Length: 532
View 1 (tube, rainbow, N blue to C red):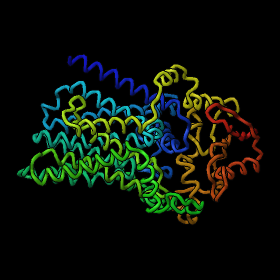
View 2: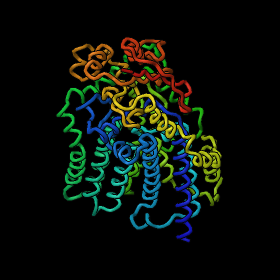
View 3: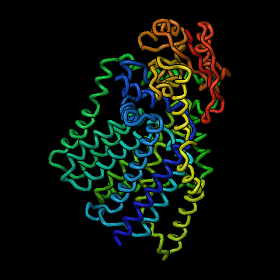
View 4: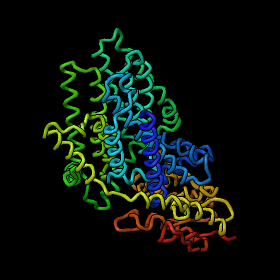
């Protein structure tokens, strides 16, 4: 029976991986992805580092994993998406493992195989999770969410393991500190989790009445310090660029959207109203947040009564979800996809519940279990798995493969050299040189004019005012435009305006336009070629 259960889990999670891969390879290209793929390419191919060699508007650790994926395959973009799929699969397995540990309460009991009903419940929750409306975009794109989630789940895993096995608490605290620091240095809002886990380890150390509770906290802080050393080096080498990328740019982005007269999600009241409206229309989400509140309250009560030493773990995970929920309100404007961050931890808490699906001795239990099932199944759009398998059978229809073929096709017009574009991940896919200042474009580029010339010089930011000086030193062999056509420009209702300085330069210097078409971008591109 144990082997049969293991086989069922292997088959199920392979199916989940196939579902993740199918969604990833069939999703359209988002201009958000360039700011993670391109820095990875710059690091892998040219040894260029964020802040030091170009402006970067995120925490630095997201570049390294995408550098590995770019180094591992010539299909850089496809490899980046597949790496993100593997990170999500690892995150899902960690969610299930942590939930089982919380449910069992002891290290030995946690290794016992779950019942068939428990397995079915886990399978249902995982399937609902990967089909949750807020998760669909995040799961299918190459962003830094997958990495930050994986590292924070690893930190939570070591917290739970340290609580379950006190003999390992010092080592587990160190490991927890390492991974939560990596998570925070991958995506900025996850840095708040460092304080959350510090409080969880403090509660655990005091509750266990260790002879030296400070040792646990010292190990935790030591792990965080060790993991932070590379970021500290980058900050020391380029302090102004580090300050710009993680603090100044956030303010500039808010000013930019205010200049576009955007009204939705620009203040706390409207942000909260949009979240409430989205949640109130979905029973599943109301259930998830009810579980979060219940778990936090029950854990506090149990700790007060000193009934379970595992409660700091439950409370810590609930606090992680709350912190990620609160930080989702901090960006301006707030987008609903930001509220995907707490979902892995809330689903984890729901999976840890003892739901007796097969024993309905009491009406309350029967109604509750039925409500859970109905809420879960009605909260998602059910997908036909055969359609996903059909997608996997024909790689020529995958946008990441089409992007690679498009990048290689540029050689028909430009043999080699340097290409100027706001999506440098495309030409770098085919081995072209690019301009590092475009690595996080269009984001730093579109807010650059909000800085004074002196500030741009201090932060290493290039704007349209410096563009000609940059291109005078290293003229481009070609200029690729068209990707920003549907997006706002420097001013209100100026769609595609971010690429206007590029096209103006091309016309002024006699570049010849070539219209290019590709299946992944029906609007088409224009390649301005410098023909001697």
